[in-house]
Length: 47
Ligand SMILES: Cc1cc2nc3c(=O)[nH]c(=O)nc-3n(C[C@H](O)[C@H](O)[C@H](O)COP(=O)(O)OP(=O)(O)OC[C@H]3O[C@@H](n4cnc5c(N)ncnc54)[C@H](O)[C@@H]3O)c2cc1C
Image 1 (cartoon, helix red, strand yellow):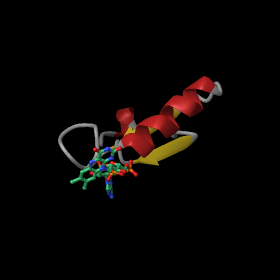
Image 2: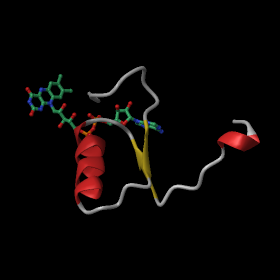
Image 3: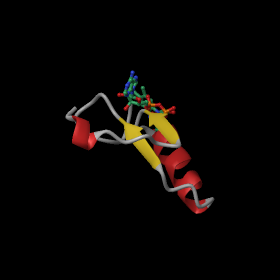
């Protein structure tokens, strides 16, 4: 990652399965918007 792309997030969610997606949704609902969801697979959805 280039230095210009660096960003500190308040929350990092690992995995974009149902658990990760719901966690991100609840965080956004709670007003916590400085988050990122990291997924190692090619897309979201999990198992
Ligand atoms: C064959 C099968 C059939 C099923 N059928 C049903 C059904 O009909 N109905 C139902 O309700 N449930 C079903 N389930 C269960 C359902 O799939 C799981 O309960 C659900 O996917 C669990 O969600 P999760 O977010 O906890 O985990 P997962 O869905 O496993 O998501 C975890 C995610 O994290 C990612 N990940 C893991 N490690 C890392 C890492 N180091 N860095 C980045 N990303 C990472 C994975 O790639 C994955 O996308 C089924 C499960 C299986 C295996």
